[in-house]
Image 1: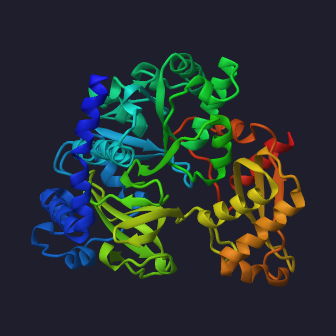
Image 2 (image 1 turned 45 degrees about the horizontal axis):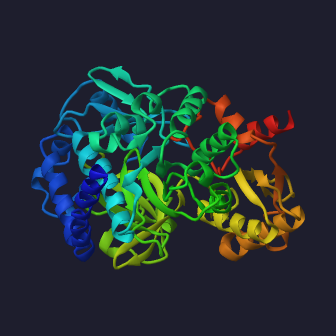
Length: 501
């Protein structure tokens, strides 16, 4: 009880910092920019681009090129093997290994002490601070937080270590947060997913779990295992005091009804926007599902309007020039040593006072085989619409193109694993197609009279299809995401083959 009260008191003191950058967002970003340039000026990269003589953002945007991971990898690799002062002045000991979802090659994202403390951990505290502010009578700290992260496969490379971001964070978690979390570090960091799941269940069913955090798809797997082990009907019977689910990584829309059903009680849901590269957004109210863009985490933001993203000379703008409702590719410069890094996510602003965003998709996670520019946001909205109308519940899905052959039009092909199948499958398919046309004028144009795109093809996935596929690829665990849309058939083909067999 005393520990919970002390945590609540401490977190309330964080709110004034959040209110400060909400009140002065551009000034906050300028301070972050100045700090990063000052920190980077004596690094190898800083000397290459003469950070010491930079006086403005205009100098920075003119002289420093945009980079992708592939562009930046040589500098990261040198740092990972022990070289210092290449991209950041302090020694970088940790690298978050990320497989990504559009590239099979592993990425190693630098995690400096500054990014660990001033970004990732600060965000965790702010997430709880905002929850306390919005729920002043919360009892969440009187029990335990159930966490579901990745695995500890920490490997040495030179004088540094690499592993899942969640493993790095859990291993460095402050004592007060660790003592309030379940399972313990030993179980949380187990590398083999299935034994780990069993061990988690055995630990958490004995605890008074008041909050939980993780990726919705993997948390659902855990919750189902808990019900199986306890022979209960709903999670409320196991954790009667469960109060909130902090979730991120993928869209929550396809999972809303499933969670309402499996939990058996009404709880709060809070979305976060984090990645190996940084922590970017937090849902700051229960009323608004979009997220507050966090401006004082040592991350300087830039944005590329998606209509210019694939051009030879894309438009790049700072925060003060963004517009509500436009789709932007996110560019970050961070206290982890990333400089003008194109992270691959797209966002839309729903508000500029304060700056609130939704994650709209990926720069590479889209289908644009026919000029339709279908992004994840469109897909999620249309699936949600079709599911509601046909009492369907979707567990997992992916989609890709059927390429044109001769005079034959192309199409989109979907494979969907339903938790509850539509009461009318033809209606579901029709509504999905129709709502995609309502949401996306480019898709609508390509569907006109089937001239470019035929009616979509939808396959029902067998039970546990996506779980089995991810297991076969060695990508079980909360840090791995099912790729939703692809501009090729690289994900569709193996899934269809597994579904047939």
